[in-house]
Length: 89
Ligand SMILES: [Zn+2]
Image (cartoon, rainbow, N blue to C red):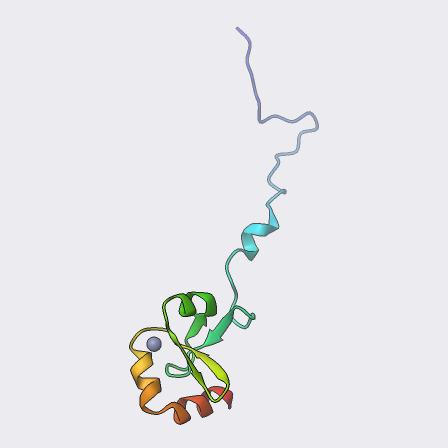
């Protein structure tokens, strides 16, 4: 009977030092160009592509604003100047 030990390397290293860095970069970080802050709910980050795909954005005075949820659309429409100013401040 032959004993196979596939995890055992010839030089004795355990092999736990080769974590791929890609895993740490898969999630978009706040502050990147892919993310925006919802002007209605300050402090809420919005993934731009996701917001656009759901129609959760408004174009106002040449600037596009991304909204975090459907509830923010009517609120932005009701007083766009207020939210546009707050977002650019
Ligand atoms: Zn919202």
